[in-house]
Amino acid sequence: MKGLNSMPTSNFTAKLLELEEIIISDFTSSNTEIHIHFSLPRKACTCPHCLGLTDKVHDYRISIIKDLPIMGKHTFLHYRKRRYHCPLCGKHFYEPFSLATKHCRTTTRLAFYAIHLLSERQCVRSVSRLLDLSDSYIFRRLKAVQFPKPDRLPTVLSIDEFKGNAGGEKFQAILTCPDKHSLFDILPSRSQVSLQQYFQGFKNKKEVRFIVMDMNKVYRELAKDYFPQATIVIDKFHVVRYVTWALENVRKRIQKQLHPDKRKYFKRSRKLLLTHKSKLKEESMDALAVMLSQSEDLAIAYHLKELFYDFMKSMSRTEATKKLKFFLLAAQASQLKEFHACLTMLANWSKYILNAFDCPYTNGFTEGTNNAIKVIKRNAFGYRNFKNFRNRIFLALT
Image 1 (cartoon, rainbow, N blue to C red):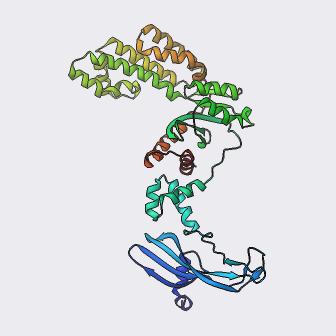
Image 2 (cartoon, rainbow, N blue to C red; image 1 turned 60 degrees about the horizontal axis):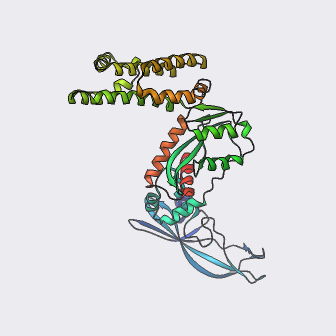
């Protein structure tokens, strides 16, 4: 205990700064700032020009360096640094300092902390205000972060797009690995030419086994041309939307013909139509029966929706094929114009939709990633520079 009590206070401050070799000469604190004055122990240093060893000091200079905040206060290090003289080559040089590089007015750990805060999906302006740094400094640190293009394609690849409005393009493309739940890459454009140029550089295209996508003809043709051995899988979520849209359009058509009071009831009770029948409670079933009694077309559309939901619950491709044929026959017999788009979609994409029942992968992770990207974009009020946008996405999601 005696040795602990006799330890200089500066030693504790040095430990707090994680620089136990420094010699603290002064310490001042205000409501918003902390100023620490220090120097390093004098020792022989190697000349960076001729590699000679010298301990001859030429002069001293004060450098003020901004460091990580302490107790919520901005911290400034007043570093009295030595400039050595080398008698062998006659050059002058500064003693090495681990916390900051030459001519830098911020510590390296402050720069890393700023990048860490960006990875927590905070906007640049919030980070700059918190650390009392300029926006341009944060952007320079962001540009210094490198996320190079991957060398090899994954076995399972998911492709989608999101509205980024960055780099002069309205939509950007996102590539993920659904089996590993990880982000693979962000591309500046979703255009066919841009995607072709990107995939041409990979040598293991034959190793890709599954391509998961939505119903985009560009992605389908790209998959056929560049990944001939891969199975194209259409995500089930995008398929269900066509049926729910058709049901909603029937409801809206019937709703316009009703009395204003019933019209409001139909609009507020739309979830009864979209919810799976098996999940409805008894009172909800009674309310649903009242709605369906208002129109035969609405009852037929609801029945088609239930048939399609049953198809989507199939446990195998064989079962799904049978149920899909039954749904197609029922939809064609109904002659509801609202289901024409759904029938056309199934005629063009049923082969790839059925592949989903043999494949355990979906676009669920990709859609979740897109939602996270929207949050990053909204916090920053949008990005013009695609590289900065890509770096922010990788920082936050990897």
